[in-house]
Length: 351
Picture (spheres, rainbow, N blue to C red):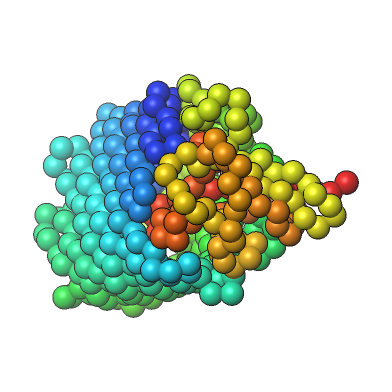
Protein backbone atom coordinates (compact mmCIF):
# COMPACT_ATOMS: atom_id res chain seq x y z
CA UNK A 1 0.00 0.00 0.00
CA UNK A 2 1.18 3.51 -0.78
CA UNK A 3 -0.77 5.73 1.58
CA UNK A 4 -0.98 9.35 2.67
CA UNK A 5 -2.79 10.21 5.91
CA UNK A 6 -3.88 13.78 6.52
CA UNK A 7 -5.00 14.68 10.05
CA UNK A 8 -7.45 17.59 10.06
CA UNK A 9 -8.52 17.08 13.68
CA UNK A 10 -6.21 16.05 16.49
CA UNK A 11 -6.26 16.48 20.25
CA UNK A 12 -5.48 14.58 23.39
CA UNK A 13 -8.93 12.99 23.15
CA UNK A 14 -9.58 12.55 19.43
CA UNK A 15 -7.98 12.31 16.00
CA UNK A 16 -9.21 11.82 12.44
CA UNK A 17 -7.11 10.69 9.46
CA UNK A 18 -7.77 10.83 5.73
CA UNK A 19 -6.08 7.92 3.93
CA UNK A 20 -5.09 7.96 0.26
CA UNK A 21 -2.95 5.42 -1.59
CA UNK A 22 -2.87 1.90 -2.95
CA UNK A 23 -2.53 -1.73 -1.95
CA UNK A 24 -1.26 -4.91 -3.57
CA UNK A 25 -2.72 -8.07 -2.07
CA UNK A 26 -4.06 -11.58 -2.68
CA UNK A 27 -6.82 -12.89 -0.44
CA UNK A 28 -7.81 -16.39 -1.50
CA UNK A 29 -9.78 -16.56 -4.74
CA UNK A 30 -11.90 -13.47 -4.02
CA UNK A 31 -9.52 -10.49 -4.07
CA UNK A 32 -6.26 -10.26 -5.96
CA UNK A 33 -4.26 -7.46 -7.56
CA UNK A 34 -3.41 -3.80 -7.12
CA UNK A 35 -5.95 -1.18 -6.11
CA UNK A 36 -6.20 2.52 -5.35
CA UNK A 37 -7.65 3.23 -1.93
CA UNK A 38 -9.33 6.13 -0.15
CA UNK A 39 -10.48 5.96 3.46
CA UNK A 40 -10.91 7.64 6.81
CA UNK A 41 -10.31 6.57 10.40
CA UNK A 42 -11.04 8.24 13.72
CA UNK A 43 -10.11 7.76 17.37
CA UNK A 44 -11.91 9.02 20.45
CA UNK A 45 -10.69 8.65 24.04
CA UNK A 46 -12.02 9.71 27.38
CA UNK A 47 -11.73 8.73 31.02
CA UNK A 48 -12.30 4.98 31.06
CA UNK A 49 -13.45 4.78 27.43
CA UNK A 50 -11.94 4.52 23.96
CA UNK A 51 -13.34 4.02 20.46
CA UNK A 52 -11.94 3.67 16.96
CA UNK A 53 -13.61 3.43 13.56
CA UNK A 54 -12.40 3.22 9.97
CA UNK A 55 -13.76 2.90 6.44
CA UNK A 56 -11.98 2.44 3.09
CA UNK A 57 -12.96 2.02 -0.57
CA UNK A 58 -10.65 0.31 -3.07
CA UNK A 59 -10.76 0.33 -6.88
CA UNK A 60 -8.75 -2.46 -8.51
CA UNK A 61 -6.86 -1.98 -11.77
CA UNK A 62 -8.93 -4.83 -13.24
CA UNK A 63 -12.14 -2.85 -12.65
CA UNK A 64 -13.49 -4.55 -9.52
CA UNK A 65 -14.12 -2.54 -6.36
CA UNK A 66 -14.50 -3.28 -2.66
CA UNK A 67 -15.17 -1.41 0.56
CA UNK A 68 -14.76 -2.27 4.20
CA UNK A 69 -15.64 -0.66 7.51
CA UNK A 70 -14.68 -1.59 11.06
CA UNK A 71 -14.95 -0.24 14.58
CA UNK A 72 -14.35 -1.07 18.21
CA UNK A 73 -15.21 0.51 21.54
CA UNK A 74 -14.28 -0.31 25.12
CA UNK A 75 -15.39 0.82 28.55
CA UNK A 76 -12.81 0.11 31.27
CA UNK A 77 -12.76 0.58 35.02
CA UNK A 78 -9.80 0.13 37.40
CA UNK A 79 -10.39 -2.03 40.48
CA UNK A 80 -7.21 -1.02 42.26
CA UNK A 81 -3.71 -0.02 41.20
CA UNK A 82 -2.99 -3.15 39.13
CA UNK A 83 -6.41 -4.55 38.11
CA UNK A 84 -8.90 -3.32 35.51
CA UNK A 85 -12.05 -4.75 33.91
CA UNK A 86 -13.80 -3.71 30.75
CA UNK A 87 -16.47 -4.36 28.14
CA UNK A 88 -15.38 -4.57 24.50
CA UNK A 89 -17.52 -4.38 21.36
CA UNK A 90 -16.18 -4.64 17.82
CA UNK A 91 -17.44 -5.23 14.32
CA UNK A 92 -16.48 -5.19 10.65
CA UNK A 93 -18.33 -5.21 7.32
CA UNK A 94 -16.93 -5.98 3.85
CA UNK A 95 -18.53 -5.67 0.40
CA UNK A 96 -16.91 -6.92 -2.79
CA UNK A 97 -18.50 -5.87 -6.10
CA UNK A 98 -21.84 -5.01 -4.45
CA UNK A 99 -22.81 -8.61 -3.85
CA UNK A 100 -20.30 -10.55 -1.75
CA UNK A 101 -21.09 -9.03 1.66
CA UNK A 102 -19.48 -10.40 4.81
CA UNK A 103 -18.95 -9.21 8.35
CA UNK A 104 -18.17 -10.06 11.95
CA UNK A 105 -19.53 -8.73 15.27
CA UNK A 106 -18.21 -9.46 18.77
CA UNK A 107 -18.99 -8.42 22.37
CA UNK A 108 -16.86 -9.58 25.29
CA UNK A 109 -15.70 -8.93 28.82
CA UNK A 110 -12.03 -8.15 29.48
CA UNK A 111 -9.88 -8.39 32.61
CA UNK A 112 -6.32 -7.01 32.85
CA UNK A 113 -3.97 -7.65 35.75
CA UNK A 114 -0.40 -6.34 36.23
CA UNK A 115 1.79 -8.79 38.15
CA UNK A 116 5.55 -8.31 38.72
CA UNK A 117 6.08 -6.51 35.43
CA UNK A 118 3.73 -8.76 33.46
CA UNK A 119 0.47 -7.61 31.90
CA UNK A 120 -2.05 -10.49 31.95
CA UNK A 121 -5.30 -10.16 29.99
CA UNK A 122 -8.31 -12.46 29.71
CA UNK A 123 -11.23 -12.01 27.34
CA UNK A 124 -14.41 -14.08 26.90
CA UNK A 125 -17.42 -13.31 24.73
CA UNK A 126 -19.48 -14.18 21.71
CA UNK A 127 -20.72 -12.87 18.41
CA UNK A 128 -21.78 -13.68 14.88
CA UNK A 129 -20.34 -13.68 11.36
CA UNK A 130 -21.99 -13.25 7.98
CA UNK A 131 -20.06 -15.54 5.66
CA UNK A 132 -19.28 -14.77 2.03
CA UNK A 133 -21.97 -17.28 0.99
CA UNK A 134 -24.59 -15.21 2.93
CA UNK A 135 -24.94 -17.71 5.81
CA UNK A 136 -24.94 -16.37 9.39
CA UNK A 137 -23.01 -18.23 12.08
CA UNK A 138 -22.83 -17.62 15.83
CA UNK A 139 -19.64 -18.26 17.80
CA UNK A 140 -18.04 -17.99 21.22
CA UNK A 141 -14.46 -16.99 21.94
CA UNK A 142 -11.92 -16.89 24.77
CA UNK A 143 -8.47 -15.26 24.63
CA UNK A 144 -5.60 -15.13 27.12
CA UNK A 145 -2.47 -12.98 26.69
CA UNK A 146 0.66 -12.38 28.73
CA UNK A 147 3.14 -9.61 27.89
CA UNK A 148 5.92 -7.54 29.39
CA UNK A 149 8.82 -5.25 28.62
CA UNK A 150 11.84 -7.55 28.09
CA UNK A 151 14.52 -4.86 27.94
CA UNK A 152 14.31 -1.13 27.41
CA UNK A 153 12.28 -0.47 24.26
CA UNK A 154 11.44 -4.14 23.61
CA UNK A 155 8.08 -5.67 24.55
CA UNK A 156 6.84 -9.21 23.89
CA UNK A 157 3.49 -10.94 24.24
CA UNK A 158 2.22 -14.50 23.95
CA UNK A 159 -1.43 -15.26 23.26
CA UNK A 160 -3.80 -18.21 23.08
CA UNK A 161 -7.29 -17.90 21.62
CA UNK A 162 -10.14 -20.38 21.12
CA UNK A 163 -13.16 -19.94 18.81
CA UNK A 164 -16.12 -22.35 18.84
CA UNK A 165 -19.12 -22.34 16.47
CA UNK A 166 -21.84 -24.97 15.96
CA UNK A 167 -20.01 -26.65 13.07
CA UNK A 168 -16.38 -25.63 13.54
CA UNK A 169 -13.83 -24.94 16.27
CA UNK A 170 -10.22 -23.85 16.20
CA UNK A 171 -7.44 -22.37 18.35
CA UNK A 172 -4.72 -19.81 17.67
CA UNK A 173 -1.33 -19.79 19.37
CA UNK A 174 0.75 -16.69 18.70
CA UNK A 175 3.68 -14.52 19.70
CA UNK A 176 4.07 -10.77 19.13
CA UNK A 177 7.00 -8.43 19.73
CA UNK A 178 7.66 -4.70 19.33
CA UNK A 179 10.80 -2.55 19.36
CA UNK A 180 10.97 1.24 19.83
CA UNK A 181 14.15 3.27 19.47
CA UNK A 182 14.29 7.01 18.84
CA UNK A 183 12.48 7.52 15.50
CA UNK A 184 12.19 3.83 14.61
CA UNK A 185 9.37 1.39 15.40
CA UNK A 186 9.38 -2.30 14.48
CA UNK A 187 6.61 -4.74 15.36
CA UNK A 188 5.51 -8.16 14.20
CA UNK A 189 4.02 -11.48 15.12
CA UNK A 190 3.71 -15.12 14.15
CA UNK A 191 0.99 -17.66 14.86
CA UNK A 192 -0.40 -21.07 14.05
CA UNK A 193 -4.07 -22.05 13.69
CA UNK A 194 -5.12 -25.51 14.91
CA UNK A 195 -8.38 -27.45 14.79
CA UNK A 196 -11.05 -27.55 12.09
CA UNK A 197 -9.48 -24.58 10.24
CA UNK A 198 -5.86 -25.63 10.62
CA UNK A 199 -3.35 -23.95 8.37
CA UNK A 200 0.30 -23.17 7.79
CA UNK A 201 1.85 -20.59 10.13
CA UNK A 202 0.84 -16.97 9.50
CA UNK A 203 2.49 -13.72 10.48
CA UNK A 204 3.00 -10.01 9.96
CA UNK A 205 5.72 -7.36 10.23
CA UNK A 206 5.52 -3.56 10.25
CA UNK A 207 8.34 -1.02 10.14
CA UNK A 208 7.78 2.71 10.78
CA UNK A 209 10.18 5.65 10.66
CA UNK A 210 8.97 8.80 12.42
CA UNK A 211 10.65 11.41 10.23
CA UNK A 212 9.07 14.30 12.16
CA UNK A 213 6.29 14.70 14.74
CA UNK A 214 3.78 14.90 11.88
CA UNK A 215 5.26 12.59 9.19
CA UNK A 216 5.74 8.83 9.45
CA UNK A 217 6.93 6.47 6.70
CA UNK A 218 5.78 2.88 7.18
CA UNK A 219 5.88 -0.48 5.40
CA UNK A 220 4.26 -3.80 6.25
CA UNK A 221 3.75 -7.30 4.91
CA UNK A 222 2.06 -10.45 6.10
CA UNK A 223 -0.07 -13.53 5.61
CA UNK A 224 -3.62 -14.07 6.88
CA UNK A 225 -5.00 -17.45 7.94
CA UNK A 226 -8.38 -18.84 6.77
CA UNK A 227 -11.30 -17.63 8.92
CA UNK A 228 -14.96 -18.19 9.80
CA UNK A 229 -16.09 -15.64 7.21
CA UNK A 230 -15.05 -18.03 4.45
CA UNK A 231 -11.97 -16.37 2.98
CA UNK A 232 -8.95 -18.54 2.37
CA UNK A 233 -5.41 -17.52 3.23
CA UNK A 234 -4.24 -14.09 2.09
CA UNK A 235 -1.00 -12.24 1.39
CA UNK A 236 -0.45 -8.49 1.44
CA UNK A 237 2.27 -5.86 1.17
CA UNK A 238 1.98 -2.14 1.97
CA UNK A 239 4.03 1.03 1.79
CA UNK A 240 2.62 4.12 3.47
CA UNK A 241 3.09 7.74 4.41
CA UNK A 242 1.16 9.30 7.31
CA UNK A 243 1.00 13.07 7.49
CA UNK A 244 -0.54 15.08 10.34
CA UNK A 245 -1.61 18.53 9.18
CA UNK A 246 -1.99 19.89 12.73
CA UNK A 247 0.40 19.69 15.64
CA UNK A 248 -0.39 17.53 18.61
CA UNK A 249 -2.66 19.55 20.89
CA UNK A 250 -0.96 21.13 23.89
CA UNK A 251 -3.27 22.93 26.30
CA UNK A 252 -0.57 25.47 27.15
CA UNK A 253 1.53 26.73 24.20
CA UNK A 254 5.25 26.18 24.75
CA UNK A 255 4.74 23.69 27.63
CA UNK A 256 5.80 20.11 26.90
CA UNK A 257 3.39 17.37 28.09
CA UNK A 258 6.23 15.19 29.44
CA UNK A 259 9.66 16.48 30.50
CA UNK A 260 12.46 14.13 31.62
CA UNK A 261 15.55 15.65 33.30
CA UNK A 262 18.55 13.71 34.66
CA UNK A 263 19.23 14.14 38.37
CA UNK A 264 22.27 11.87 38.69
CA UNK A 265 23.59 8.63 37.17
CA UNK A 266 20.53 6.63 38.24
CA UNK A 267 17.67 9.08 38.84
CA UNK A 268 15.55 11.22 36.51
CA UNK A 269 12.96 13.90 37.29
CA UNK A 270 9.70 13.39 35.39
CA UNK A 271 7.31 16.33 35.02
CA UNK A 272 3.91 15.80 33.37
CA UNK A 273 0.97 18.05 32.61
CA UNK A 274 -2.54 17.08 33.65
CA UNK A 275 -5.01 19.96 33.75
CA UNK A 276 -8.12 18.05 34.80
CA UNK A 277 -9.52 18.13 38.35
CA UNK A 278 -7.26 16.13 40.69
CA UNK A 279 -6.46 15.94 44.38
CA UNK A 280 -3.80 13.30 43.82
CA UNK A 281 -1.80 12.19 40.75
CA UNK A 282 0.37 9.07 40.71
CA UNK A 283 2.52 7.67 37.91
CA UNK A 284 2.75 3.98 36.96
CA UNK A 285 4.87 2.49 34.20
CA UNK A 286 6.52 -0.54 32.67
CA UNK A 287 9.80 0.25 34.49
CA UNK A 288 8.37 -0.80 37.89
CA UNK A 289 5.66 -3.32 37.06
CA UNK A 290 2.94 -0.61 36.86
CA UNK A 291 3.03 0.16 40.57
CA UNK A 292 1.71 3.74 41.08
CA UNK A 293 4.06 6.28 42.71
CA UNK A 294 2.94 9.63 44.15
CA UNK A 295 3.75 12.81 42.21
CA UNK A 296 4.07 16.31 43.69
CA UNK A 297 1.94 19.21 42.50
CA UNK A 298 3.87 22.16 41.06
CA UNK A 299 0.83 24.24 40.13
CA UNK A 300 -0.62 25.19 36.73
CA UNK A 301 -1.49 21.54 36.06
CA UNK A 302 2.10 20.29 36.41
CA UNK A 303 3.14 17.28 38.53
CA UNK A 304 6.69 16.05 39.26
CA UNK A 305 8.48 13.02 40.70
CA UNK A 306 12.08 11.74 40.85
CA UNK A 307 12.44 8.06 39.91
CA UNK A 308 15.15 5.48 39.07
CA UNK A 309 14.13 4.87 35.43
CA UNK A 310 16.68 3.23 33.09
CA UNK A 311 17.44 4.72 29.65
CA UNK A 312 15.01 3.72 26.91
CA UNK A 313 11.42 4.11 25.76
CA UNK A 314 8.81 3.25 28.41
CA UNK A 315 5.01 3.07 28.51
CA UNK A 316 3.22 4.75 31.43
CA UNK A 317 -0.10 6.16 32.68
CA UNK A 318 -1.28 8.52 35.41
CA UNK A 319 -3.62 7.42 38.20
CA UNK A 320 -5.84 10.34 39.22
CA UNK A 321 -7.42 10.32 42.70
CA UNK A 322 -6.76 6.59 43.02
CA UNK A 323 -9.27 5.45 40.41
CA UNK A 324 -8.93 7.08 36.98
CA UNK A 325 -6.14 5.92 34.65
CA UNK A 326 -5.33 8.69 32.14
CA UNK A 327 -2.46 9.95 29.97
CA UNK A 328 -0.88 13.43 30.27
CA UNK A 329 -2.46 16.15 28.15
CA UNK A 330 -0.98 16.08 24.63
CA UNK A 331 1.43 13.16 25.27
CA UNK A 332 2.44 10.67 22.59
CA UNK A 333 0.40 7.47 23.10
CA UNK A 334 0.34 3.84 21.96
CA UNK A 335 -2.49 1.25 22.26
CA UNK A 336 -2.76 -0.74 25.49
CA UNK A 337 -4.06 -4.23 26.29
CA UNK A 338 -7.64 -3.03 26.85
CA UNK A 339 -8.02 -1.15 23.58
CA UNK A 340 -7.29 2.24 25.13
CA UNK A 341 -3.95 4.07 25.20
CA UNK A 342 -0.89 4.57 27.37
CA UNK A 343 1.67 7.39 27.17
CA UNK A 344 5.30 7.10 26.07
CA UNK A 345 8.24 8.36 28.12
CA UNK A 346 11.79 8.58 26.68
CA UNK A 347 14.85 8.50 28.97
CA UNK A 348 18.08 9.37 27.15
CA UNK A 349 21.31 7.45 27.95
CA UNK A 350 23.56 9.14 30.52
CA UNK A 351 26.71 10.56 29.00
